[in-house]
Figure (cartoon, rainbow, N blue to C red):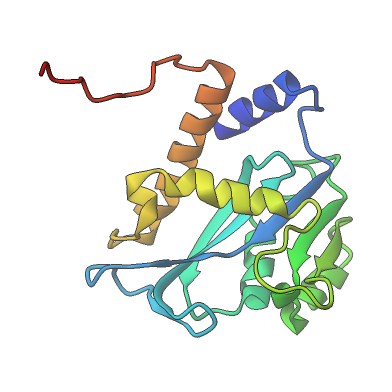
Length: 196
């Protein structure tokens, strides 16, 4: 369903059904005490929980998702995430944008193998910049993170099973795409003014 909705949404936006470029990112999300065995500390973001390794195309629509403990290095998880799909799934895909933190020997070795034609473009923060700095093509990841955080079940990971948590992301993503294709058109909520 996600594939059909993604292709239709891309066509509605004037794009080809399959992407030629994509981005990977792995934000951490805090878990509750009932978060199950796949939990860990992400020292860089000071959170105890899981990482959502996400692969999206340049409009922000989901291609693949992988959940791991938060302490797993992004570069170690990148080959696992990239291995969820094949070049045949996305025949036009040529470039995958990644953060500097994704740079890792395991990822580089996986990309060097002859089974894939993808090129990894590692983007770092421009020299001399501080705070949030949008990077070309990668800003869609920040936008996508904001979209998902509006869903209550995505704001914190309280699922015991990583399988059920992994399933929630494509479900909420499908809702986003359905809303883009056919907006519900509900008026904004306002409290009724009480009579004086």
